[in-house]
Picture (cartoon, rainbow, N blue to C red):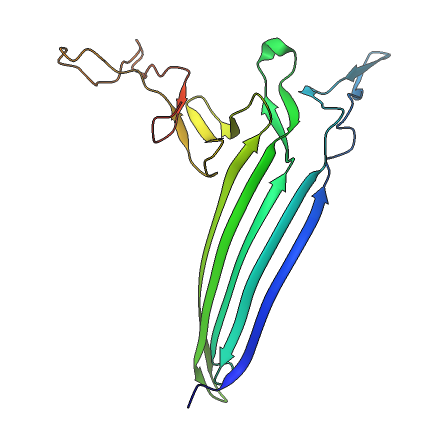
Length: 215
């Protein structure tokens, strides 16, 4: 005889939602910097704006199931979903020589896939004591599928040595570092050693590389 089924539910859904940016993000506007004596000071944004900026569109779908047995004393839940974010609005850093600190763009296409499983039970249930136990497993992966023309990576944050940088075709979440200059002469007794400056710091060059050595 099979287990006593308390609940059996299947779930499925499809959604498409839009997300726009903040006001005054299409055309540069003047902002008040206060006054200098009796003169009003104004400023413009340091970010280069895009007049034809498109709204971000997210398309997603998910399927799942909820199961419970033995008067809800054994519970199993599972959900799998996939989502695609098109035209994500991002700020890309620019060199100071351009006259702007960043440029606002529609990024391209970013996809996400996730799985979540939950197992729960109530091993003890009396009039005086109830003990619930739950275990949850979740996994989420987000990948950059496409970027705007002229860009092949997204930098979520950077510092003097590296940061969180993801190239097209890779999953978001990796940490990279600038390439360290090392002694390349195989005949040298110091072959492979890092090259330090006069103050003892490593002389990393300006190129980024990930764990696989990609630059």
